Image 1 (tube, rainbow, N blue to C red):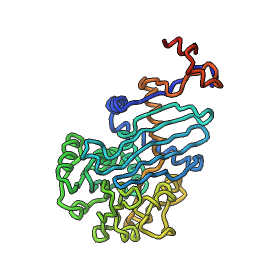
Image 2 (cartoon, one colour):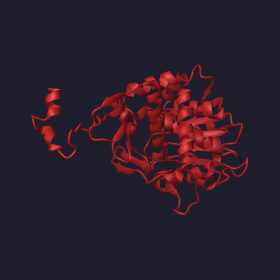
Image 3 (cartoon, one colour):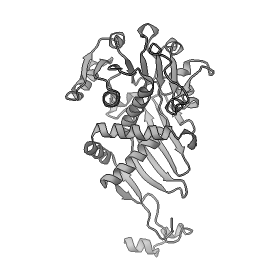
Image 4 (cartoon, one colour):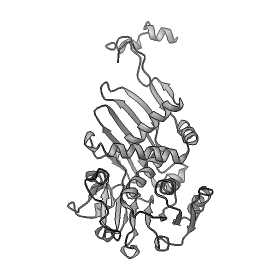
Length: 353
């Protein structure tokens, strides 16, 4: 990048991304992000991967999620604070960056709070297409909070789910979900317990927020052929599945070194056998062993999914002419003279004045 070339970072605000999703449609965005995720998972070996860096506190966690291939670097900043709704804040808040590996220049700065919900749901659907029984039509959705609509719509549009059996410890959350899903073609039934909700379900999605070692799903609730999409257990000390559910199932993960720390499999010995999902997508592992097998996608969220989502945002913003250039990096007439920006006779500052 020549030093005389004016450089700016493309910025996508929360309003920009809301507008983008409204213009493209939720279904198109879910499909688009799922396609980008699938393509990137098929390039698994091309990425420099690491588990995310987490800073835990009494009330939650703040994480950085980095990843790169030989051309593009990405990271996401994200938190998880279950008590935030008391203060009018989302449980999860996020933003992310795409940068050029050759120069280190930040190319895109974007909101990722709304986008994280879309990419998490798209990831769930990518996994379920590979692992759930063909013809799955009924899903139990346990936890009806901020991410539940996205999960419901991803499974509806990308997997063909037509009926939802819902449960949340907060009935108002279930009512909110049912209201938001009106007109989507999904049939919803509010249930009084997890056990009632999972009865007859082909797929079970757990997406709860409490930072506890919970046992939301227990072995007695399992049925042959069930696919479990475990989304909410995503940091140390936060699980949703009874350990015996995992022992009775085939377990699939995104990136095993991270999931063993953060996922439901944190309850089990370090040598417990799991399969990374990319192996199934690439045809290196058969996935579901039989129609009667129970499969678990122990989803914690991995940086590659955010890399894919940021690529989707960048390309869609270019297609729609969205976003604003921001001067995140100082403009230097002489790249070796950073201090010169502070001198009043600097021609750049004179031009601004």
